[in-house]
Image: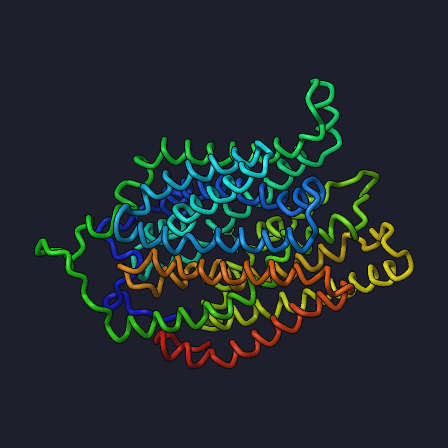
Length: 477
Ligand code: GLN
């Protein structure tokens, strides 16, 4: 386990009112609230994400490349605004209020999408982008604020929180995807005298409803379960402001080294997310066109496959948390950067399944011209999704926890924002990469790109582990 001295380190949770609450299976009750609120926010995000590219290509009739570019720009910006939202929360409004502002804007965005005109479409995307900036980094920071520095429950807390994210991500494509693409729902619309071709708007609207539910839960329970959590940093009774002045102490050398270590690891997460975030774009289209979706006698909407990754997260997150704990007890837990390198290796290896599936499709396309080539069994995508999630669990929840551990208190949210900035870079690159599919004319060759990129990054990061350990003062595993 990383050895960090809480006495010398002002962390994200260096607040006088950090909780000692253990009422929720040993965790603060505020965690349950943040779990539910973030679950609904992610419901709205992933519900819409499952539909976006499919909607643009199948309904609006955009080319794949155009849809993939827009998808990359949209998701990139969604993860870029958290940098600003994190900064505003740190300096001005506090994480507590940011969530309310963000939640309202996000919900408005999804409802705008439901109007299904191009103008409202762009307005909707812009609103989701802005709202997520206020919401996403700050809800994660608030989880960190529930625990005191050095509290060993922190990693477990983030794992539980991560399951909330993925519970939302799991349910959303099932519901929003059914509303948008499900044959049953179209019949229902028809029998109610409504236009079945307009089924997509119901999917988008459902995403907005999800966000409103999260917001309502947050507003009604935050006084009770999050008292004093997430106020602006400067209004807390932090020792730096004891004399009434608001001067910020400069970063110490140790703090600065930790920030450098954080920023270095962020570079590698860009590659991970570039590979991972093919899910909503190239892999979503692969599911739609090239995957045999007749399972157990029924035809499954392609968007439903978007639920597989969150499903695997829910399945394996507790096992991973237990694994790290068991290894930690024996002094053998890998350091966070080493876990991240393993994560990169998992996703790179996982893409080999897609290379194999791509070969089947390539062979079919070579024989049929542009006829239907839904020849890949769903097992290929599922196997890839499984490996991508094993990688995700080595990188993403531990990464959030790593940020909240190493970030100096007054930069807690802004460094959380920087974590999201790396994701933003990955998302934009993911869109660019996905857009290559139409130019490459070979699915197998296309999927070989993330294999190589992720494996090279895994090796490079593994080589950097000792340096990072020196910078953070942590012991190498
Ligand atoms: N699934 C996680 C989330 O939505 C991680 C995704 C990401 O960070 N790109 O927060």
